[in-house]
Length: 253
Length: 253
Image (cartoon, rainbow over all chains, first blue to last red; front, side):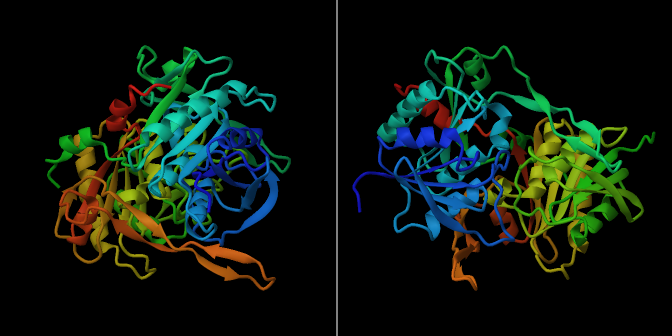
């Protein structure tokens, strides 16, 4: 057994995504790597788990020479499996990404990339999700990889509190630096496109745009990204709204 | 257009689930109802969205006389569709459930029932997820329906802060009352069962048990349920860990 940390690398864009390969390349500097991902895209799978189907994890062609498994489940399933019955050793760290497209603000709740990082933190190990603000298959990951290395080195040096992971987003181009931020208050404004199929039946395609509710705040991940900084948001698994808890404590039922 | 509130009723157990019918029956006292759900179970779908498939919502047989649609997407998809292109009127409230099985503590992050309620809150309307601690198809929902009525009446009377929903869990038997709580700190300890299929290939079934990390705390939803109270936890969409944010603000990258 190696003394180097054992790092689980995963993503939600699937095993063939360029971002995954780029992440493996960086992480090899930090430890012994294993990769697990899905054959198909798991974008938008959030923290979904598979409760009604058996899971399989099958060794496939190595990525950059490291053991690689394809899993038929969601990103969270892949992490769960990795901590339980797949390897002789439990991962010391989980990193997820590099996602093609950002997961800032409210996107954290929909993101499969962040689902994997959140699940890693639930298994008690420091976990980070990385995303780049570029959907293009030609995206330039070179700057994002430097951010990955810097942030992961900080995690190695400082650790992370239990049950907390990081949501790291990198702007296009050369980042001016790295900002620790909070999640911007915003939402996706959905515009479904209604179409008619060849059999005359209606169907709907999800599209939409992001609306930032606090465009002037300088403390948010959206502000950092818009100003060409990489954003680092610590993410908790405790979804209790404590402010509301105090307000509704005296409701009479 | 009716003056009564327009209430969207959904769930993650699918359109044939008893809990959905029971919820519709209660909610009819409060307003004009529309039901949207899936044909198959969406348990464990979290806040997952469908990005790579078109969505369909098709009118099906009414439940307790109210318009009912089946949707091929996740609970969050169903809510998004309902607020966008499906009805002439936007829902004033979203209720989800009654789930067969609890969604207390960390289960909130995996739950499709809560995914729908969270999405409702993102659309700016008071939203509640209801779950009963009984997986049996013979479960007695009569007490849970009284809790639903009491909690929803409080929501009608008091409103809810924007972007906050409620996670309501009901114990088996007769609840002693209703407690406003925070999410217990705990996790699922997964034990995958490894099996070999008829072709000699390995597969894994997810199973496991819940571990409460703060068994002595009286403020949590787990404590309420174990002591036969219904639990009400306000849930936020802001996943920032503010405590960690302060700690890592000075990291040198």
